[in-house]
Length: 456
Image 1 (spheres, rainbow, N blue to C red):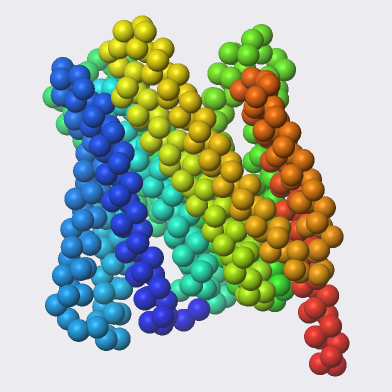
Image 2 (cartoon, rainbow, N blue to C red; image 1 turned 135 degrees about the horizontal axis):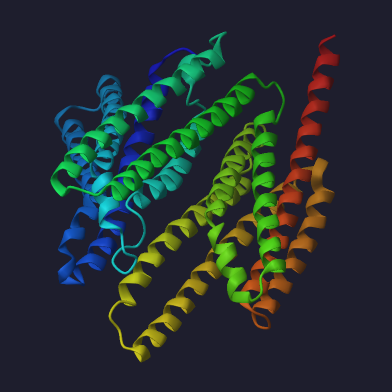
């Protein structure tokens, strides 16, 4: 695709909104983390743990203030709007680089501090992971909604994948630069603290492992997304292969998680041990949600290009919001839990644990209700589509029964049993989505063949 002002303007709006989201989320997480640290006045050395949130809040606020001032000082016309978009695109890039450099400087120090759970709501880079999930989903949705591609500058390049691997090389170079910054910081820190050889080796391995994992994870995600984008761009069908592939990845990840959960449940000697084993693999659920939301973004975008269905659009938006908000609220709730459970007598601990557990259950129920509502609206919207009406009518009956059974089980059995049942209900949803994609895709193929026959 060629460069044009429309793409730059759309990217500018997305970048500005991403900065706003980052500042708001960082403010919430920073406040919780700061409260956890300051509640124990002896732990002032842990104040550096809030540095990432502080940099994001300060840097993002400066970017927004400069952008707002620029827009107020100049009259609104095509040129100023374009310049404002360019500013936000550059500002978001500078903000990301600044935050990652600060992270690389403080990483060795944080490793030495040890991050005790009673003072923090997670590891040092937790905020980066949260922003990657929530803001990343918004950016993907924004790009699809505006009909632009992340790799738009190389999309029509005949050596597309060669250019993609060059970008991976640039990413690797930047990660190597961050590693070098951490190495310099680590060297100065070692010189100041005079660490013994055991700790020196331990911290070195942790730093190398952290950057290796980040590089592999980001490279694989970028390669996968570039592959999906190329298939979507080249597709002449109603649904591109990228929609099917993203759904396939979701199903695969979920199958892996379910296999691990069932294996842990069958081999564990007690329910507590089973829950501990399953919780160790719970981080995989974040990637499952990420893959599912990418699929919904592609599917809704490609389906709505042909079928102008506002109800379907609202359904997909509800699911996107419920999934991202559930992830965000879950992370916030863990910080609030650690804040309230510190330094309490036994009776207070029991009372607060009961309250927080009830609150977490309510949040999960609200998120589940929103998800069920979204899928129900999606089914109702698609019932209008004659080609897949029978599939959706059958799905209505199936999901009503599954939902009713789950509500009943919540009043009769334990937390783990309900979760396992919920997982099987989620499999039914994924099967429904697979059937839906096949039905819509096959209809698109038949339509394409009919058009080709008419042209002949």
